[in-house]
Image (cartoon, rainbow, N blue to C red; front, side, top):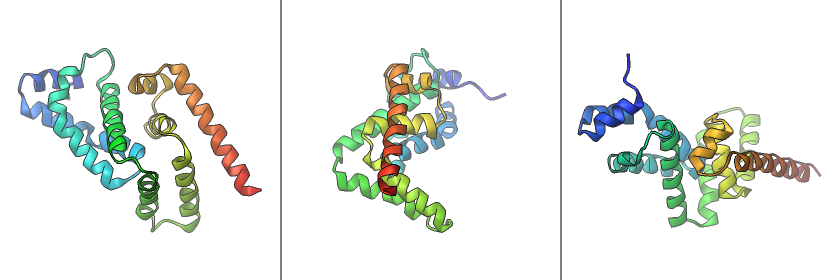
Length: 178
């Protein structure tokens, strides 16, 4: 039976490098996925995932077990992504990052590529708070309560954001058909 995340955190805080390694190995893909969905660039997500993993030993003492470890970790990754976006915030960079999605999916069928391209443009048009919410609720399949905890907002705010995303995407699709 594998040890729980909490047990691994406790052992890592006590200096057990193996426990820390297991914790990172267990959650690295999650860290990368959230980073990629928020940043929109594979290269930036890889860098951020490495940065988060390197900083994690110093951040573990901030885990209070008031929520699941994964909820706390999502918050760490989202905050790191926000910091990175603030440092590199230019609209052209964000558009280029979302365009990297198309490069990764180049070998897929043309119809799927066209749908992905539209989604990329639509997501880029969304404000950062809506993109973060979509990344957690749809990308990570979190409940609104879990996403709210990870983002540090109320569950009602997450619900409103998801409603707002649907409205904006529907409006954009209607405008493009007209």
